[in-house]
Length: 277
Image (cartoon, rainbow, N blue to C red):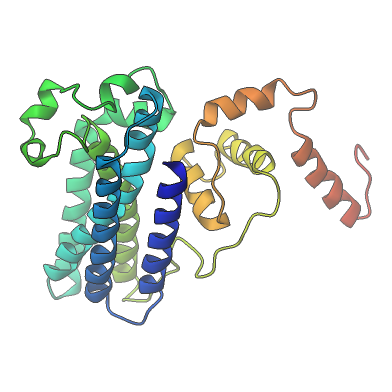
């Protein structure tokens, strides 16, 4: 399963990145990206229809991690298309409109704070309720979209995870557009560089960096899972999905931070200084 989904996601991301880097306007990009992502989503659904999960753990991984990361970009581009199609003329009206969209996202998130905290924290004790099929939640059943879901390809909360991830990207987009309006339409830098850098160190070395940034709150109040997704995207690498397990392994090493120590030594050497000088 992992081999197939990884290959499909890589191919899909490459196609979407190519669309994003084109000179087309945002509406055309949104439509083209939506078509690519919808096709990939259908391929994923067809694959799962004939695939038998090895155990509950594999099923949870699929519906908690894999499916939402295919789905969230499709939700994002469809929503982006609707936002831009309905965007009014005039700077003040646009600011009011875009701020209204921000409010809607915040309302959605505020109603689901308990689950968002659960997901962001990397917790897993409720995964069997949230991410196994045919374990219907009464509240979820009452949501209108539930009736349209395929019970063989859906769980109680995989859609919510995708929606949360989509909202993260939409929030960034909306705030950037509002900032542009505040700066008389001047384009500001986007979240990712046009060409991805590839991390040449080990995954464990990058995890040292990741946890040091998170511990120091270097990027502000950003959840660890969100920071991890961002770093993986920028540095073109896939880290262990179980962040807490990796951290536990780091803690019990004789030297818990060998890479950070190496970086410090390298920098001091470049400065012509010695450690503990």
